[in-house]
Length: 228
Image (cartoon, rainbow, N blue to C red):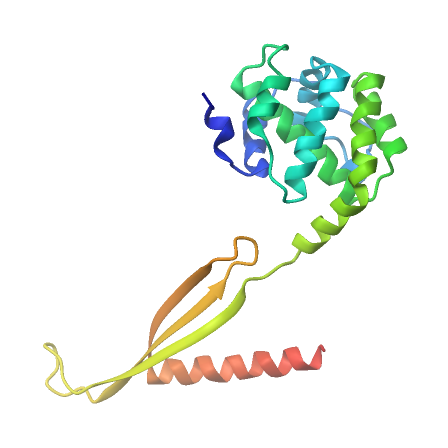
């Protein structure tokens, strides 16, 4: 039976779990390229020992699953559970393993770190050589498509799919006998570029506020045209 780990949550959502699991470690004075020439995060340092508990062969297979997820191809959580069963990992250990591998692989690709340098840095952090070698071989095979995937996901904004509107003219209400004021009902349908689903945004504006909105949208459109 699958645990809550297999619910399909994104890997980024697992990072806080590792923060909760953090064990006190000595501060690392070195800078690491795969961390953007910054100190290695404490939670990553803490989980290096967790990775070392898995055999190098199984670690490479888990890396392949994590890379598939980073490339948008999905991840087989049940397979990861089987690969970590010999190490007698609890649910938190499995989540931490996936999260730290996701961070290492995506961060290394983001900062354009070659596999040899990544292997050297991971060994400096305490990961056994055979583990670092297997991890970096998987990384090297997918480095280029991983960078393309990360590039495609960066700075992506939701797109405006459609606009619908309606104008109501209120003659009177229970509060005032005479109103005679138009009200604009505006609905913007935006499409989430990651999920591909429509997300409606509805609003009701007075005539004056609608004129202000329209004027500001025209100004923003004119400004964007100058950037083409």
